[in-house]
Structures are given as C-alpha cells and as structure tokens.
Image 1: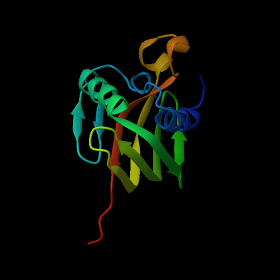
Image 2 (image 1 turned 180 degrees about the vertical axis):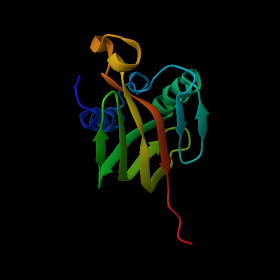
Image 3 (image 1 turned 90 degrees about the vertical axis):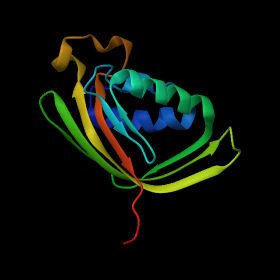
Image 4 (image 1 turned 90 degrees about the horizontal axis):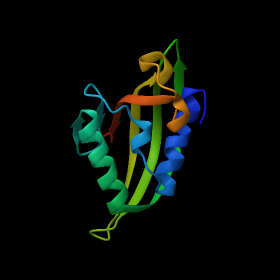
Length: 136
C-alpha cells in the first residue's frame, strides 16, 4: 500500500471500479463519517455496513477524477475532487450517473493509533463527503 494520501485516494477509486472491498479505506472508529449522495453515515460500523451493501448491490463502476487536490500534512490530509461517476444497480437493473464533488480528511494510521499499515492503507478516510451539485 502507498505511503502517500493521494495514492490512497486513487487506490480507493480503483477499488470502487474493480468491486474490491472498500471498508479497509475507512477508519473503524466512532468519529468516522461518510456522506453520500443519498445517505449520512456516522461511525465506523455504519460506514462499513453501507460499503459492504454497496459492493454487493452495484457493479460496473466508472469513476473519472477530474480535479483531484490533496494536501498532506503531518499525520492528516485533506482532499477534494470533481468526479464523474456511474454504476449499475444490480437490484433495479438501473444505470445511475452523477457529476459529483468529493471531499474529506484522511488520517495516517501510524500517526493516529500506532497501527502497522501492513493490513491496509497507511492513510484512511476519517471523513468523506460526496455530493451532486444542482443548478440554482
């Protein structure tokens, strides 16, 4: 796994495209938060359950990063991106597509809890926010 936060964000996009497990990219503690286009998830367990369900009920992901910006600091990093995303909902058979905005914070595992990063990314999302802009 990568030593840099930007690579972990890109690896997460690849995991989404490939249908790989997404849970290892998120911290598993209570302060972890993920806002999706239609959901608000609070706590590592809630985030993990939703990510597992998403992986089971979606396929054929397309993720096109357009403006990824990452600011890595001592022990934490912020990121923002504009992402064209699409996937197939396996339950409804519907293809969904959004132009979206992603932002959040990653925490370096070694800096946060002394954990060895051998079992997952060195950087993990503590907060992720995905939204779809609407014209006003």
